[in-house]
Image (tube, rainbow, N blue to C red; front, side, top):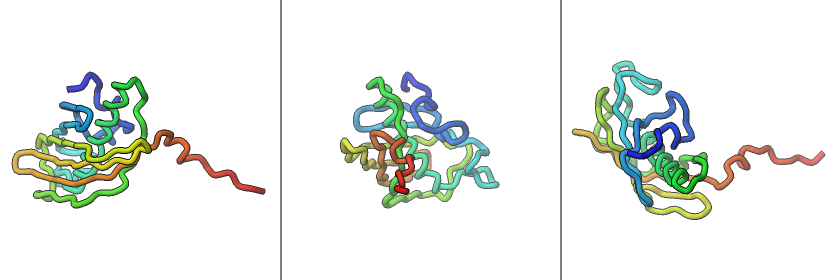
Length: 152
């Protein structure tokens, strides 16, 4: 477990925080947990969490890894963007309420400009999801949201 609550590691708030905790982390990986609740913002009427939400769980595990790296360096948590997903596979259509998911993100590539590729997987009894996610965390995300100056 980390010294920081998950909400202090992610640039998310409220119901958008989909992970429960960081179980372990290191320079190249993070392992997070999520107990699937019986209802929630993204749940189907039957209480299940659709398997396509696995991509967001993986992305948040990457964000948690980045948050741990930032906190250890005494820096603020930075905004990041999911650019793409390759080869997402999941052997179930949905994650059942009460399932204890283990979400792992392992860094394959990361450069100084903020681009990264992570191999991710979600495991639980009878559940396996895998994908490679491409992410971008610019050194100054606020510059992306500024309007360009226009000439009169």
